[in-house]
Length: 235
Image 1 (spheres, rainbow, N blue to C red):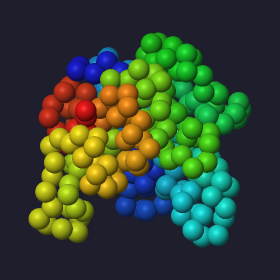
Image 2: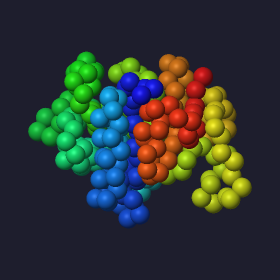
Image 3: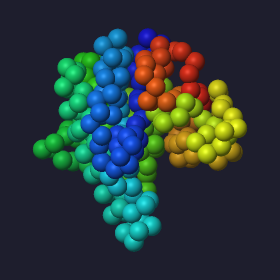
């Protein structure tokens, strides 16, 4: 494996599959199988999962809720997704811990950096839930923060397309794919693969990001092995 320790960023929408809302059991099983496959090869895996399949903070604020309340609701949604992912991974035989930025000791451990690292060293998959515990921060920013805290080698940003394009490839057949970009390129072009706070945090700490298609079988393994797939964002 090229990367000894990685942080995998999953969107909540990914768990919904074609349903658009909630959790698709088949998608959850497939994602878990990819994670378990790489874990058994010796890579330490931490995960940040979003909550957009249940509630999006910004969308809720637009709908009339105040932003802080809506963001806290979104954090609760990430906990639900994290517990579902934990159950699926453990069903496949890999020990998993959910660590929440908001205390809820009945269902998850409270996030402590040194404890998270110890779990990884003991070959447990660690899922970070409830974002940073603060409103106005996305799970992209959480991924950048936690990756740096645990000393991950790379952030693996899982999407529905095979990298970053100059325009939406779902709508434009002539969209151009980038094999590599710098952090400044992403910021200057206004590319929204991750929010600007997350990109800036990665840039300041020289944390590489690989954007790839999660739904192509074997892609997670290929990224961890160092194959050139997707788009790499680096210094």
